[in-house]
Image 1 (tube, rainbow, N blue to C red):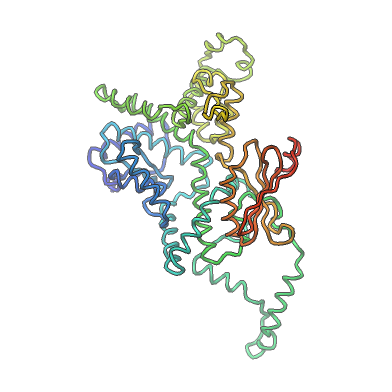
Image 2 (image 1 turned 90 degrees about the vertical axis):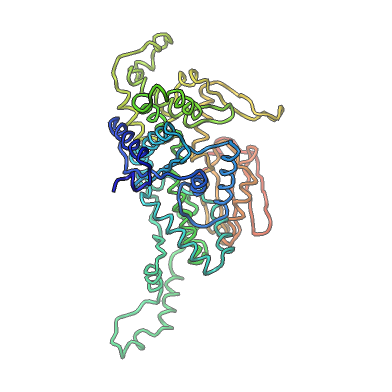
Amino acid sequence: MSLAELGNLTPELAAMQVEIEAHARRYGLDFYPTIFELIDADDLNAIAARGGFPTRYPHWRFGMEYEQLSKGYHYGLQKIYEMVINNNPCYAYLMRSNGAIDQKLVMAHVYGHCDFFKNNNWFAHTNRKMMDDMANHGTRIRRYMDEVGVEAVEDFIDACLSVEDLIDIYSPFIRRHEPKNNYDFSEDARKKEKDKNKAPRFQAKGYMDSFVNPRELMLRKQEDDERLKPERKIPKHHERDVLLFLLENAPLSTWQQDVLSIIRDESYYFAPQAQTKIMNEGWASYWHSTIMIRDGVTSADIINYADHHSGTMASSPTQLNPYKVGIELFRDIEDRWNRGAFGKEYDECDDERERRRWDKKLGLGREKIFEVRRIHNDLTFIDEFLTLDFVRDHKLFRFGYDPSMDAYEIESREFPKVKQQLLESLTNRGRPIISVVDGNYKNRGEMYLRHEFCGVELQMDYAADALKNLERLWSRPVHLESVLENAKAVLSFDGTDHELEKGEAIGLADEHEASP
């Protein structure tokens, strides 16, 4: 059976897939088998609301996101042209109401994504069978809902989701320490864990067992051994994977541990997509543009294609378009490496006219962009390849809020400031870096966390809500250290009240010393 038959495509669309796939492979793209599903707009919105998966665990947020997507589509405010899942095989969705040229464009775009998923190093450790695991997650959570009640499970999921970003996105590549447990919640694993926790036993004949292994004595010996263990700092080092720390140390029941492990697994699965949004969309856009213009569009379709492509690339003064920035930066890299406009000699050239005319005819552009696609994420992509010439040519600027005017406006067009703002927004996927510093703060079993301040203050309402849910998971008071108005501040929640304690103003050196 062909992939087109698996994906319920019409004969016309199946032939289109074969054509576009052949073009993609001819250009050197390498991807897992790709299955396209033809579905209605309503079904596509429902799948998009679940993060691209047809089946996930039940939760109210998926219904809320579906309502938002559905209303946006029916009011003509938005339309989902493509959706593809990082899986092996890859699954992608085509909207039934799209025209033939749209379907071709989407297929070409999807093959760009599939190549990126398979070959970009930041996806190397992702689960390639997540379609099956998402369904298994749903089954497990539904079982817990039957056992302990829908409301209890859904409320616990709410608490977990509010802190789902508190993971260490580099831990798949850096083993900081060995986890205490592999968090296998199967029945066999539970039985092994139960047996492991039993009191130790000595070998003895059956008739001597009650004398050699008296149960009371064994239990007392186990308690004494635990009591005599040397005290250990928890955690030994600052722990950026807050969810892992909770899994290993929080007083959670078995079903709560399982639910938290599910949220954590899914956070790690989606993390590389957030780390490579500009690159991923830029790479897919580069290839749909290349394939469609050179191979996929007839003279009769060119206007229709150009209209839809330009709509995807449209920029807004208030929002960065990852499709536009990504494709233009890949094109700029290809052009520079084709001309040899890189390296010491080029960088030291001060003549603007000569730099513009620079052309050593090296022809290394295509090879270079494939290398970039393999190695980089958005942060390193912008840091390495965003140049002064690129910022000037594309009229990029730094945008900010002016409280005196109560409006957003252009703050600067200076290259260092534009680049700095981009890098700040991409560091840790734009999320604050928070670590567990002490799990037994003041010897009272309280949790003390520290925000690695990099110039951007926390949103205090978000921080307060996160602390409230962390306290619920930890079952003890929780404290968060950060910097507010250039002064050290500690926000605390004890289960009832929030408290903010501000210290004296700190200098830059103090601030760095306080960072983990």
